[in-house]
Each structure stands twice: as C-alpha cells, then as structure tokens.
Length: 339
Image (cartoon, rainbow, N blue to C red):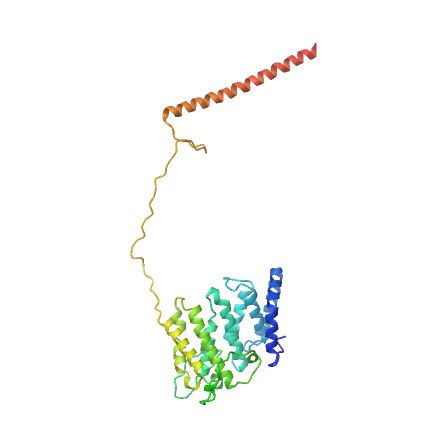
C-alpha cells in the first residue's frame, strides 16, 4: 500500500493505517507468538533487501513496519525479540544511507521520531540519531571557502553540493512562512522547496529540544552529546527564517546549554566507613525437639518428666493387657471348638 504511494493518496493511506491500528493490536494479543514471528520474518526480509544497497533509504513500507513495532510491542525491554532487531535496523539506516533528496531527509526525520518513541520509557537512544541531527544542521549552514569547516561523520558530506541541501536564499519570502509540521507528502516527494526546507529545520530544532530535555538530559555524560550541537546552532542564519523557527532555535539552544553545563562527578571513596551492624548473641536451647514449651522451674520440669514417664508406662501396660486378653480369648475359643 505504501510502496507505490503518491502525493495524492499518501495521506489517506496513513489515515487508514490509524483506523486499522486498534484491530491489529487486538489480533496481536490473540496469538502473540505467531504474530511476532510473522512480523519478525517481514523485518528480516526487508533488512535483506536493504543490505543489497545500504547507501539508499529503503522503501516507505519498511518505515511503516517500524511504526507498527513501536505501537504493538513493548520498546522499553532490555532485549525484545521483535523491537530489538528493528531498533538495530533503524541504526543501520540512519548511519549508512546517504542524503540526496527531500524524501531522504523526510524519512530520516521520520525514523528519528520513531526512535524517540522507542526510547521514551527506557531513556535509550541510537547514536545515529545524534549524528543525523548534526548532519541536518550542517546542511542548513551556507558553505563558504573562507570559513572553517566542521568535521562531519558519514553518511553526511563536509563540503560539496550535498552539504548544503537545506540552505535557503537570503530573501524575505522565507520569513513570511506560517508554522507547519512535516507532511505525509514529504515522504514521497524528491524535489526541494523553500517551504520544505524551513519545515525541516523547524522539525529538527524541536527534536533536539525534546531529546535533550526529556530523554538524555539526566544521563551521566550527556554534556558530551550536547557540545557538538552548539557551534552549529551559532552558525545558523536565523535572520532568513520566520519567527517561530527563531523561537524553536532559542529553546533548543537553551536546552543544549543547560545540558552542556552539567559537570560530571568524579569517583571518590566514601568519607566515613559505614557503621557496622549490631550483632546479637545467639540463644541456644538445651533440648529442642521441634516443640516449643514454656519455661519452667527445675522442680516443675522434673515433675513434668515423671508425669510423662508415668503416662508412657501406663500406655504400655494397657497395650500389654489388651494383648493378654486377646490371647486368652483365642485360647478359650480353640478349646470350645475341640470339645
């Protein structure tokens, strides 16, 4: 359905998927093992197709399967039979597929959103997510020969025509654009427009703010993740962008500065030795036969032993008398029979 989608029907496909999602969840709960194995086989098949040309983004239906996994299964588990392979698949796409068209950027941002859904509870994020957002910011900055160039990790390029795909001209047209979200048609469109470039930058800034405020802000060492973003944000030509983009830029920069200012605590031994636990002397009982008895004086204890002995002897005597009586009766019965 999504593999051959066009700009005219892509939105209706997403609306249909949203309506089918509750029913798909119910089907998954009816037979979890079989449904999980089926979806995992599809993910493996898509990954095998992607490996044939790992520098190109997969088809849109592959990304839809990622969305299904995030909605149908638990993504907070340390290891999940379906979610974990999907998570690794997303890491490979973001770290290997090249950015060449508008569709590639839209798919990458779509994957970043799905990765945020995966890590919303576990507070884990893919390393490729940060590299992708850094690459998008680098593509926004106009490149000049005299300026210092930043070290950008592949699949992004440091210079050349593909290093400034999102750079906008210095015109007033971009400043008059209204705030808009990324659209479903961006996932099937290849040509760049001024409107898309502004929306992509706006979405990237909002993603950066949400990631560092909600997901990684409390992690130890988060400052090392935030530091590379600050120089790129300083280089953005904000005067060419509308007001809402500038507001999101300020919010993202504030979140990054707050995380970047966090200091890591050094490991140090404890100031004082821990207080030893109080040890109690064990209490031993002289006789323990798995029966708890109240404490008695020595005389009462002797008397209780004698009573117990008398009771035991009495039982033995009664048992012997019964045996003798039974023997006498048997003997008399035999004598009567012989007569």
